[in-house]
Length: 234
Image 1 (cartoon, rainbow, N blue to C red):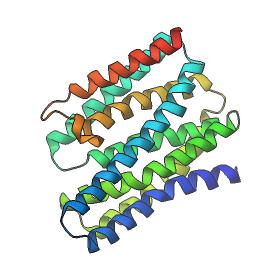
Image 2: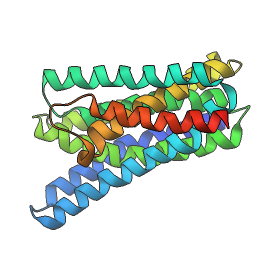
Image 3: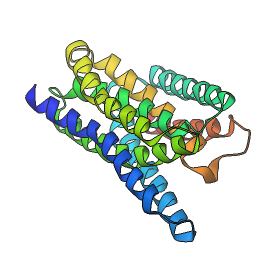
Image 4: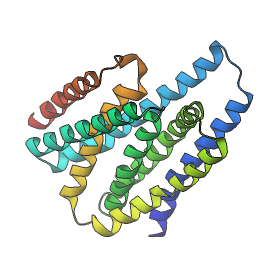
């Protein structure tokens, strides 16, 4: 239990640390091409880490535990659910996409971390590393988005501080309720994987986003699903 609290706590606190780094950066950064390079570099790094968690932990566990049809259903449902949430936030206004992405992958991954900590210890440790690494750039970019949406720096850091504890809360939920439910845990991970992949193309990878279109990233998600099914069948 102590080890689980440490790994989930460290993975979660990077949300707050990422916000602090963004606050310091925004205070001293100057407009210009170099600034844009750093910002887009952080976005790309975060996307790479998220994709690593997706490709190396979330989807492989689903492939190992689930059959192709139920796995595909969970994957599609995840993509559709995240699409509707993203669309709702876009209609409401404000740059909430990065914060949405951070929480929608942070929470289910933390739950999966707790659920697998005993039965798949090494995989759970790897997942905690992914969570911690991806939270840093995601929090960095989410801070900037919230600042431009009118939030005050102090309020953002307070929000990020409390969000940091979601890692521990999620891990404990997984530990006590899903440790013996490997199939449910696998569905949760695949569901999160489908949603995360959608958000990668919709919000985190700007180059792939078509203005005013919420369906384009879904096609990219379905394309990735074809590869997953092929791997499972073969």
